[in-house]
Length: 535
Image 1 (cartoon, one colour):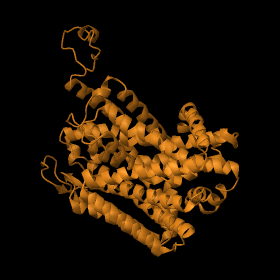
Image 2: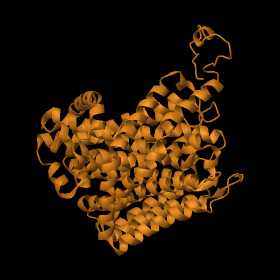
Image 3: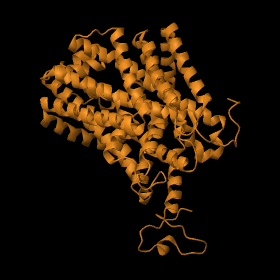
Image 4: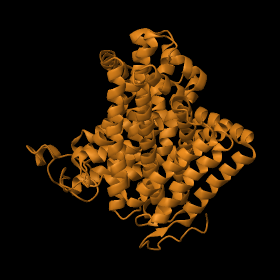
């Protein structure tokens, strides 16, 4: 690291950062090769590191996500929410297109499988602090509310609020659109070329690569399972490879076509296809039950949000659920912020919070209610119809069991496969672009850099599949280990984002600062409602 470029060298033009590209790529290749040579040892090492990370940093991650959400909400709904980010008054995308693109950054990881399985898992085996609640509508509402906590506001806030604001202000001040810019408020311009900035970029890139390659391999395993069960397609290695290759090709074409075309098209198709699946599943199950469950689960969610978010009573359960998910989302945070910052120019602080945190969280809750709620309805009417396959074959079996228990199961299964593949293609596209941005010293990422990461992640997933699901699961769990340094990188945004936004509020005339010897804020701005002391 000591040979990183010297401080003070101007960054002009489009230049890749060979340190970030080389080290990140080498770490990924090393992990894949190690998994091929000694899969059992690699799995054991990851499990040990995972347990250590969850034990020592789990509570910190829970507080970090809750604190990020709280600070972002206060900032968004104060007078500072009117601050416009990105140096322009005109947003580059309509609300629908913008929110659709935001949704692709995180939801794919749980798009279908976790949405179907997690509510059922909490219903069959209630969380430790609610162990006395068993079955019925109360148990179903509690199970769904717990899923809302894991996939809702804290998850979306970590990348779609404070980190995004720091990124956008940094870029406006000439900083690169890279994870190191999150440290700019405390390190200043020197973070641009300092070795700490390089370590920050590498840590964030490795985290997202691990968190993306793992689910890609997981997708190959699950799609081949569904294909074999529903359509008689072979579920072996060849089918898994074909699925991942097709996914990678679509994502590569999309990422090379640019944000204004490829990712927009995929995200819009994604939203409409997901809506069709929701309507079909709910329409063929029980709409009154699902609506009632959503309302009751939302009430439980509001009432128990803080206790569920900060629960620390069962270390093993936390490592499997809350801490695992929170660590995963923290690992995605800076790279998500890069993507959201890139597409959010011209939006206000309030719009960014609503569009990148609130709306995605609400959509995720509706999505989980439609799939998971339908599964709970089926389970209550015929115990074991969904929980049995889930206990035997895991996540994809739960989703498939819901489809198989409804009319038009073949059509529903086909729609489910299409929706899932589009989700993952859009996410692979968005993450490849953002990782590529983190791999550039300046300027928009080269086409070959974007293609390198997109194809490289698909190839890594295929190689890991040769050792079975152990290698895929190990890499998927590794993102929780990488969340340790990433969580530290995200921490300064808690106080730097409000400070930067206050500065911008003064620049944009939203608040006024009294000069020496002037009247108080209240006197200076009487009747305007915009004055505030910031100095």
